[in-house]
Image (cartoon, rainbow, N blue to C red; front, side, top):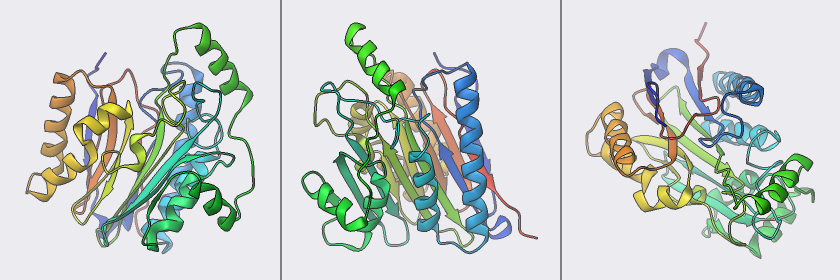
Length: 298
């Protein structure tokens, strides 16, 4: 199940390259070897390039997270926004979170129905005293944000749901995520998901918890995979805590990866530190288009 490149590490000097962007399209891909996987990777590459270009052009780290998640949610090839997985009652309920490292501020929404951009609402909550919202508050947030009412359900996803009813409820558990490191080493993270697929109505993803999304002055992480396992391991916060306590990002993620293998976990993550170190890891059959992208300053 695990291959030789289940972990990758790198280092970009943020001051030299003007910051960088990491994106993932999920750990549980719908087509891990075929043309859909290649197409999804190509989509992510384009979004990453546009995000890195915006960052190099002076956009804030949080706005780059917003831009990348919005674009990822607009692509039906991922389990986020348009094309999200359906719960067992046939409804899509979306979850997203963002976290700003400089202020160490987390915000998110859970169970959004009738709209395709939960990340927009998560960002709206960054400056609020109430920063994690579920229904019925999500509907009011969507109205205030001016999000148009639209169904996340695509014909392909509906067909997958109908097939799942016949095949013992297979899970999708792919998610999208973004980590941004600015030129001065500030860190931001965001995650958006449609959930596992065919789960109990109202089931909440890890994405809008600090186990799935976290950023501080030390590290930023976005996770993907089986949410219950991510929560059980406190994954994102566990990686950040190890970096905060003095471990290099490569060592911290290697330790978490070793623990995940030992526990036979099915998840992955992207992570970066304020020094420009980056890592992505997965314990599933494949990752979808994990792209580290930076534009060198002229």
